Length: 265
Image 1 (cartoon, helix red, strand yellow):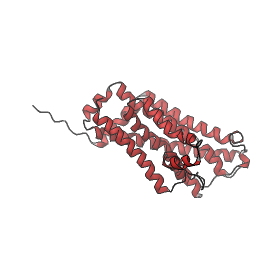
Image 2 (cartoon, rainbow, N blue to C red; image 1 turned 60 degrees about the horizontal axis):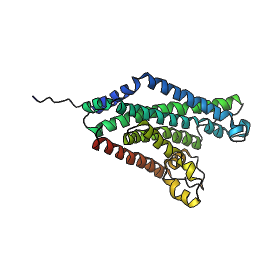
Image 3 (cartoon, rainbow, N blue to C red; image 1 turned 180 degrees about the vertical axis):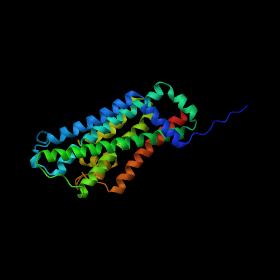
Image 4 (tube, rainbow, N blue to C red; image 1 turned 135 degrees about the vertical axis):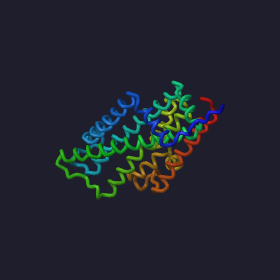
């Protein structure tokens, strides 16, 4: 007798992946701490400008205060990298991956269901953190008797949109990296190296900076946020920035899928 398994819809796969994530108390606790920590750090960055930038709040433009507050999004991105890597690697370490692949034998389909689930999750978290840190910055301005920053300012809107992209990008990069290395350590280290390596590259000669900085994701993220100076090697157009980010995700995902399809788990 041949038993035919009913093909699970992509919608149900994503729903199942979401439930696997949120079923754990660890996930709810970690994500709650992530948002609170990001907001708290954003407030700290915005009220300590005299230490971090050598200027008091009164000496700074409203948009600069908002920008300082939204540095809390960087914290969210780092914590989301850690969360994503741990969550996915747990499926390998506990051998739950065998059950998942029995339900979804098509490994590419399995990968993309997880990829889209984390994309949606990161998108929601990023929007919440972005708006929370934005309004925190506005409250700091009001508390110091400074007019609030206006959303009619295109540069501020660009900063908000570009900043919101960052946690989503690094989350998806971590999804791919964790499948490549099949460990939380590998996923975390890979993403953090990609995030922080521009600071190391800037210690080298201008020729090396000119060669390497434009191809790193940070250049695209900074360009999309509008925080790059005109003479910086990081300056890219919006189209080029989006293409570069998609290229990074595409290449790492292709390697991650190859690892999942070609190697036993």
